[in-house]
Each structure stands twice: as structure tokens, then as C-alpha cells.
Image: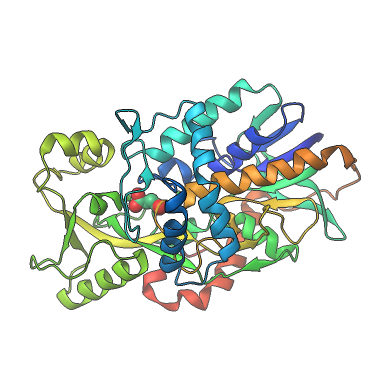
Length: 433
Ligand code: SIN
């Protein structure tokens, strides 16, 4: 069976949904996801979204982003990120995202390596609130169709031009022909034994890029978040303990109760210090303590973390939280320009699967959701302006002989092989497949 659409988007995280919403409402837009619409990393984001608070803050925000990224960032993209931050946050407000406010002003929070408080948030579940709001907006749009449990087996391409995607649904092949195709399929966290990411996010988009000779960049730029909840014998996704706890005054101690690092240094620095401390004290975790704050404040400001920890017999108003670093984000990915265009014609990439260069070698906290807004909005504008010049091409596509499971294993192996050189270190232990 074949489907024709103007724009095919792969992925229902914030970047995919926001992309769809920024396309003209007269375009036929098809969004697919390999599992269900909420099964994405955006949904898990706790801390918030960075924003340049005013004109004066733009340069400071740029410098914070560059410094955290070890100055390996693409400066022109960082400038775009900072300059276009506020206007995209306002779009979310217009969609009724319920950001925490004080007297009509944003209640900004802080995280590591930000020199001021500039992160807007919805308690400690910003990703969930933003994604839910975008899902509701997408449902209102008659021109957008979301297809769940649709696995992208490959893109349809010829002579470095993309014509859509080959999709498997319950074992049945559907060829979706599109004028423009957008990979917004997320990162690679599911390939790591210890990761805060959804286990389903296994680098499919990266594997497809490798197979089709699409430019990829900086596979070695992998971010380890300093504080995931330490749980003995837990092999599933690690629960994130948001950096905003440290931004709001949480302190790190080794198991002997000694302080060992400035909590607000960039993530790579704090993670390294924790690993060293764990080795020194022969312990698989250190402690994060925020119990110095009033009980009610903690319950209101961090309701999700409070209740999830309580389920595990940790009362954050009294107890220290055992934490350890875990893989969290992928700064490398499919190389794109400032409008999210890949090296293949008519193919865009957005969000964690892409490498815009904004994060450099180490992402500044809360810049991921921002990137997932700013760059899809820019790319959608390009499509809106150019769609009329495009003709849909439909042609025979070979019948797939492999199952979804075979392709998935093949793709995981492909990316794991590429990562192996980097991942020798036990801190980056990869899954077996
Ligand atoms: C966190 O809340 O610590 C994660 C936010 C992010 O990854 O930027």
C-alpha cells in the first residue's frame, strides 16, 4: 500500500510535533512514530527550556552555551538559538503551556553552567507538559495525521534526493511518498546500558543516515548526566534527578558526607568528578541532598521527583538521594545547516538526531527543548516557501525481505560498531545485541 503526503515527519517528540505545527495548514502532513505518540525523550525532560531573558542576556546566554560546549559549538547556530528563543517560548504560551509564573513573569530556574536564572519550566515535568500541549494542538489540525506503531525501515531515495519513507506496520510495508521528509527520530540512549533515555530510542535515524551516505557528525559527542537515581539491579531506564535540584541549592556529597565539587559546573565536569569520587570511595553512587529546603517548597517545586523517590522509600525532604551519572544526550548526529537541511536533497533532520552544532561537545542544560523548537520552526518556513515548486514523485519501491526486528538489530549493530571506539570506557557501556 502507498500513501502520498506533502511532508513526512518521523518522530513525535517536541521537534517532530512542533515542525508539523509550523507547516502551513493547507499542507498534508503525516507524522509517524515507531511506538506510541508519548514514547519519546522530550516527554521525560524535567528541568525546563532555556531562554534569553532580554536583549542584554543574548550575548551572555551565547557565551554560557559556548563555554559549556568547550567552544566546539557552531557559533552562528548558537546565535540563532539565543536570538530566536523568546519568540518560540511565546508560541508555546499561546498554545497554553502552563509555565510556572510569579506575578505575570516567568519563574526562571537555574541549572549548571548558566550564569543566571534563565530557564522557564512547568514544575519538574516541563517535557511532559510541552509534549502534551503540542499533541493537543496537533489533534486540532485536520491536515496532520499521526500514525503510531509505524517503523521507518528506510528512506526512499535516489541520486541523493529523498522521496519519502518505507514504513512497516504490523509486518506490512507501506511506502509513504512525500515532497519533503523530516527525520526527528531522537538520539541513541537506548544503546547504552545506563541511560536516562527511553529504551526505544536506539539510533534508527543515525543508522539510516549511515546506510544512505548522509553526512553525520561528531558521533563521539555523548553527554553523561551527573545525576540519575542510583537503583541497585535496575536494568531499565535510569530515572533522571533534574539538574534544577542543584540549581535550586541541592548539594553533592560522597558517601562519607564530604563535599567534592561545585554543583553548578558544566555537566561533563560534574559527571567526571562523581565518577572519580565513586572510585575513590569504592561506592556505586554519591548523594544529592536538598533536604535543607522547606518541605512544602520541595513538594510543590519538584512534585514528580518527590513522588517518584517516595515510591522508592526516599523522602527528599529528609533523605539524601543516591545518584550516579548516566548517558543522557547525543550532541552529534546528522549534520544539518541553519535550516535543518541535511546533505540529502529534500531531507531535513531536527532534534536530537540532528547535529546543528549548537551544543558543541557538551550541551548546556535545558538547551535541548529549545533547539527542538527553534530549528524546526526555521525549517518549516523553508518548506512553506518552497512546497509549491515541488512535484510528488511516485515510483516502484522494492519489497522488503527483512522483518522490523531484523532491521532494528542490524541498525543497532551498525551504530554500536561506530560507537565502539568511543565506548571502550565502562562509563559508556553499550547494550549487547
Ligand atoms: C535536567 O532536568 O537535568 C535535564 C534537563 C536537560 O537535559 O537539559
